[in-house]
Length: 285
Image 1: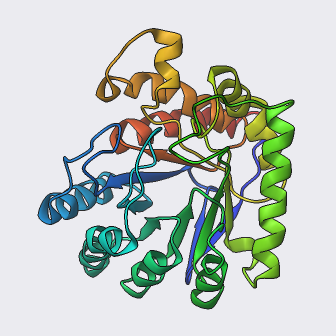
Image 2 (image 1 turned 135 degrees about the vertical axis):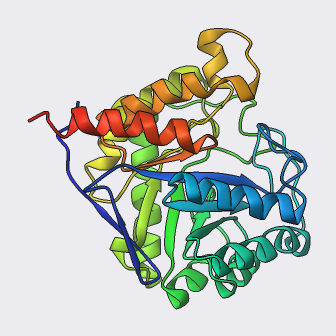
């Protein structure tokens, strides 16, 4: 267990921190093909209602995405992606909800920020040359995530010499890139990319020593193991919607190793389990 160290994440005029509790970020997929709930919230009204529900349940941020990043997923044109997420973000912001946009496209991010998003969650860690400029100009928070390959190819044959060291080294390079582009260090959050170009052993290593290694860099660490397929590699075949208990176990241990935030589909279970983990971790010298 890593000693508890509070960290802050500055997101466009707001400060999110884990000094009181681990941050819980609600996943809102406005897509037809996401692995857990594809199509369920593609309708605008259904998406907004679910976002408001998660916010009322206690989520600290609602992360809105319009392009599936499940293994084998196809690319979505920027115009279509923006049409899915921007109106949803605008309506949630109008209700006082803090939102982030889950996108790898600078054009989509710019429109989402204009609609009121306070952070950009980029699974490619600012690979779009214009993304860092958008984030720097708007003072958004950014999530830099590690992924080996692309969603289409990432699970074909993931391989590392030392997954913890390589993920840490990659994210350090992306932090340097972000800072050089004008993004303040306190606006940067790191995500080891559970399930993004990793096999079972890679994911397990990253949820333990990997989280601890990243937490030692001084940036908030966000972990998203929610309902992912690696869980059934341990449990055996189980539908995505029935993986919340397994998610709780993975996320609880990630908190013990230093995770500052969790990205979850089930906000109620995420909050309850995080509060218990917080109570234990904060009492451990």
